[in-house]
Length: 263
Image 1 (cartoon, helix red, strand yellow):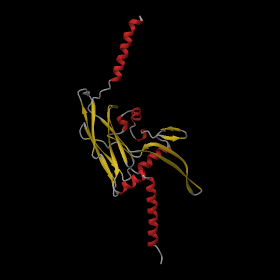
Image 2 (image 1 turned 135 degrees about the vertical axis):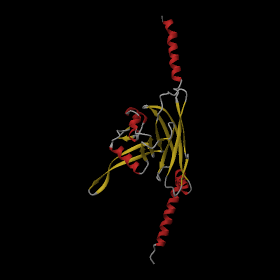
Image 3 (image 1 turned 135 degrees about the horizontal axis):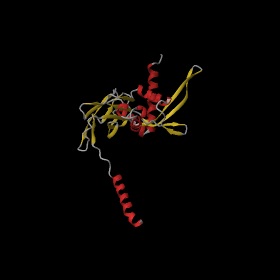
C-alpha cells in the first residue's frame, strides 16, 4: 500500500511546486511616465508641479465585464528619522514635555486617487495597501518598542499635520483624472521646501475593490550651483566645510564691525 501511494504523493508535491513557481499573470499592465525625471533646485527655486501620465493596457485575458478602474498614486521622498515634540506652558514659558521619534519615514509623502479611498476598496484592503495618509505606515519609537500606532494617535496626527502645513504631506482623492477609460494623468506638486533625493512613485490599479496590478517609477531632485557645492562639501568633507563656515562667520563679523563702526 505504501509503495502504491508514493507516486501519487510525489506527483502532488510536483504539482504544488509548479503552481508556486509560476507567477500569476495579470490581465492588465500599467504604462507610466513622469514629465521630468530630474528636477534641479536653483537659488530662485519656488516649487513646481510634475505630471504623471499613463495608460492601462489590456490583453486577451482581461474579463469583458471589467470596464472601469480606480487608480491610487503614492509618491514618497527620501526617508529620514524625525521627531515630534509636545510643548506645554509652564510658569509662563513654553517647554518640551514629551516627544516621539519617527523612524525612516518619508520626508515627502503624497497619496492621490481618482475618488475617495473608501469607494475604491474595503477598509481591510485600504489598510493592507496603505491607501491614504491614515493607512501609510509611520513607524515610531515608543519607549523600547517600534510600532505604527493608530491613526488618531496625538503624536502621529501632529506629525502629519505639521508636514501637511508645509506641503510635504498631502492627500487628494480627486487628483487622478481618467482622460479615457484607460488613459490617466495626475499632477505631483513639489513645494519650495522639497527635500533633495530620489522619489519613488507607486501606481496601483483597482477594479471592483480588488488590486489588479501595480507598477513603479521614480524621479530625482538635485541641487545645482553654489547650493550643490555647499551640500556636497558638507556631506563629503565635513572638516573643510566647518573651516569655511567659521571663516565666513569671522569675515561677516569683521565687515559688520567696519560698516557699523562709530567714529
